[in-house]
Length: 478
Image 1 (cartoon, helix red, strand yellow):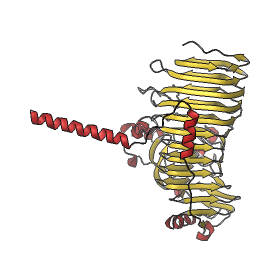
Image 2 (cartoon, one colour):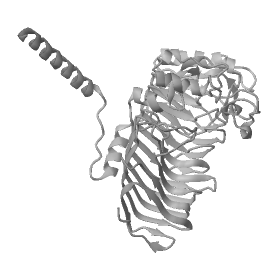
Image 3 (cartoon, rainbow, N blue to C red):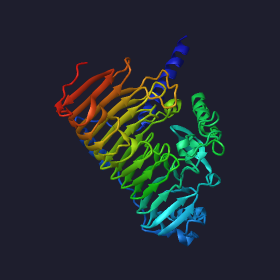
Image 4 (cartoon, rainbow, N blue to C red):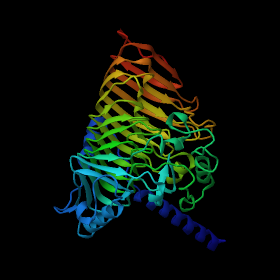
């Protein structure tokens, strides 16, 4: 008996040590102090632009031909490979139009587009190999993103040129299954049982990602630019148009800068920037004119998000302009691993087609914890539905009910001016078991709004120096 006791005790000690060691190896959680904007500045100071050797590799010297007809996939590949093998530098795309398949970036490579350069991406699915990627918050093996970096360090895409996905109602877009994007009744689409639905079922069943093989015949569109499990990445100054699906997608990545980028893409699910499972992401000086959310912060869908278990955190949005889109800055709906420490400041939003300024969306299949969201200095012209919406019953695909109740707390908006507020200043609906907690408006002015707020299961709404349609608002009693 004594021997069994000591064996069991030692086994428990080993398990405890392994657990503590595993926790210690995880990235430390950033603690937001009494001044969240000081915390934001510390994050900004910690993220540096990647630097590159002073060497240039011009794609035309590796066989590339301008004109938009010749397929330059191999020329891009050769130039990038030569660059990385020689210690890195700049892969230069001169002025002109260059057709290519997907571009796979390597360590220490800056893909730089001169002013007047335009990369046209093929719409032939045969040009796109199957790689480890993600579709709507679920990992899988699918068509390569148009620009793809997988487990790379110190990589950038820069310059004043254009990245043109060439997506339209004749190729990628109709796969969504909506007639407004060219889909015709009776033709296949992503909603067929063996496509998106099967992928979600595989994740729920715990099928390994390597066995979730889709691609040809499954109609799951590729992301445009995807940094997958990367460090020290930058996207700067380029213009991106006509994406098949999500436009900028850092996933499982850290120290990411998106600076001075213009996104113009009005296809289905054309979110502008979707950080997912990512940390220390800076999005600044950008313009988003999109067919879906301008910025949507994510952390995995349902079982797959809980499997990965990496929250998106330390996301900073500064000096951006949001034009069309379902939401300006959004958290969700693929948010199962949670989101924390989001800072938004000095942004302008104005369009009759912009539905919401700040949005948090989840449901009881997604779950997830969203906390510490700080927003200040927004100039909002017009929004269609609400300035702030917190929807814990989001139900885009139907049947989105489960046992994972989402939680939201600590949402702060200050110094906001809204000229045309739409239907609601605040629209919030939480769960009775886990009500939304601590929402504060300070120095907020909303004009031409139908209702100041509509709230359900929200505890701790504070309205300080907040005016709606010219009247000073009082905080509601809980």
